[in-house]
Each structure stands twice: as C-alpha cells, then as structure tokens.
Image 1 (spheres, rainbow, N blue to C red):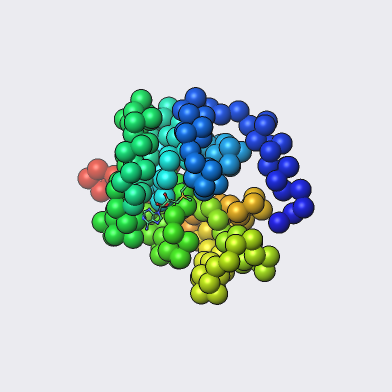
Image 2 (tube, rainbow, N blue to C red; image 1 turned 30 degrees about the vertical axis):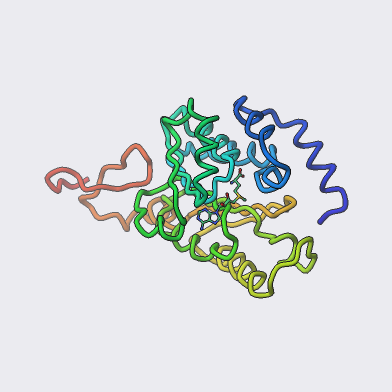
Length: 248
Ligand SMILES: C[S@@+](CC[C@H](N)C(=O)[O-])C[C@H]1O[C@@H](n2cnc3c(N)ncnc32)[C@H](O)[C@@H]1O
C-alpha cells in the first residue's frame, strides 16, 4: 500500500460529490464492518463516470451488500431507463436495502441467491458488469462476463489485490489457495486478447477491462460483414440482416 493512501482517499472523497442523497443515508446506517466492505465514495463516483461514458443501460452487479454501489450504478443508467440487476445471497441485506431505496426500485432488480447458480440461467447481454462478491469465485464470474458482456462493454472488479496478498504485502491473512486464485484471475483477464485491462491502485485494487473483440471485427474489418447484413442498429454494435435479404 502506498504510504499515504488513507489520507489520499480521505482527500479525494472530500472532493467527490454524491449524486443521490440515498447514498449518504445508506452509509450512515451501516455498521463499521459493512462500511469497510462497500465502495469508497470516490470509487462509486468512478464507476458512475465510467458507466456514463459508455452510455450504459443494462448493468449486472454481483454482490450488493447494503446497495451503496447499486445506487451509484442505478443513477448512472436511469436517464436512459436502464436497469441494474444485482445478485445478493443474503436476503436480510436485500430487505434492508429495499426499505431505503424504494424510490429507485423501478430501475433496480434485486436477485436473491448464490450468484454462481443465478448466472447459469442469466442470458441478457450487459453493457457493464461489476464483480464484488466471493473472491474465490472471480474466475468463474469472468467466464460469465465473457459470455454476457456486449461489444464495447466494461467489466469492473473490486478487491483484486486481495488485501495486498497478490503482490506480497498482506494486510489480512488469506489462504495460499485464495492468493493463487486471485493471481490467476488477474493474469487471465490482463492477458485475454478480447479485453483491454488495467488495475487502478486503489486500496483494494479496482480492475477495469473493456471488451474489444467484436468492435474490432465490425470496425476494422468491415469485409467480415456479409453483404446482406447492411443495417447497423441504434446500439451501434449489432449487424442484423436486411429485410428480404437485400444487399447493401
Ligand atoms: C464486498 S460486499 C459488496 C459491496 C457492495 N458492492 C458495495 O460496494 O456497496 C460483498 C457482498 O457479496 C455477497 N456475496 C458473497 N458471495 C456471494 C455469492 N456467491 N452470491 C451472491 N452474493 C454473494 C455478500 O453477501 C456481500 O453482501
């Protein structure tokens, strides 16, 4: 951890305005351990800005807790009538959250269950996916992200430093197996040619990875598009067949 990371975090947080008063209500109602697990205010703002930049509409969150990050995401997508699908295994967290966030409930869909089970049946293409749940499950979640992310979509993943353990500066003891798994996950995403990936050195390590493969196919090699596929739909990514098989 850089020496002044904590004071830098406080300083940046003091400059980061929240976009929704519910965020402060959620933060103020949490126990200290819950607060330690939720995103920092500036990280929420960063997620919000990234989602705005790609004009995200549908976002999947894995690991909701008290819904602090969910509210940032919901605010980023709401002007496009977007939806946040958030998976949380603890029903008590969902109940507590819905009492506070009922005004946003039209664009937040809480899904109660183990994300590994829920995702098996999940097929909706997503503009962005935020992973912030069981750390040993990150490789499996990445496989789902590869399947579900739209072209140009972004993957955001928290805690990829595993409390400093992935680079040999442990702030919390975890098993060697867990360290090896997180190191493997970081390598897997960073070396995947379908993604442009960077890890931002926040306290916990925040990964941002952009799905680039289908975009490069469409834009750099337009000859790959069959002749009768001439209509580029509003989402700017999907080529579909022209009616009656007409040529471009
Ligand atoms: C770090 S907290 C999420 C914090 C939240 N994203 C935020 O920033 O406000 C992790 C959450 O993931 C949930 N979780 C862990 N494993 C899960 C699983 N397999 N399926 C669904 N939720 C899970 C935990 O119950 C916990 O609420």
